[in-house]
Image 1 (cartoon, rainbow, N blue to C red):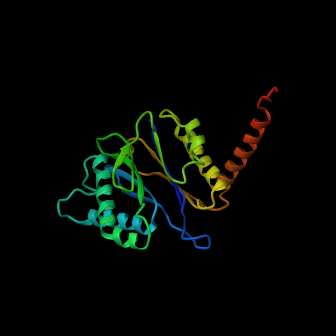
Image 2: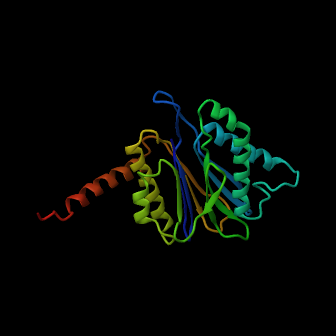
Length: 242
């Protein structure tokens, strides 16, 4: 399992993903699930991947390979809109599923790769998409400014209570990290390191990217403060009068 979050705000975007993968209770590994395509002054595209690891890696490899080809076909580097970028990801997913799907089914394995993709292309506003395993996708809006994939249920309550399109990027950063802390406390299939990226609107480059490893001083302080604050607020809640 995994946990990935993409957030679209008025002032920028937040992307975060854990790095734990497992093929059984005694077979855990670490893989980065964040991929960045960046060309300074022209485009920033961020992919967060969830699901079958071999499938997601194959899709990313296909996108990279097609981006290096000069055959005139639309790819990550030549796409004119973020909608076209989402279409490129969708096409690659369907091609990999068509190639591998029957073999996976024979072993009772589903091709369940899915992606969150977002960013900004020159002369276009920031956009964020959630691409499902079938290759269809939806776009974030003012009413739905964030997407999650993977083990989403434990981190969603805090995001629902805090994140709005006008939320400050610094507050959004804290909120998303707290959502990861809550998720990791409740589900062992999600774990450190956490790959984190903040993109400021119209900058057309990535200046803030960080990996939170085990025992990261800031993350540990944030986790401790959140736990103590939650306990403190809980003791102040009104008692039920029977």
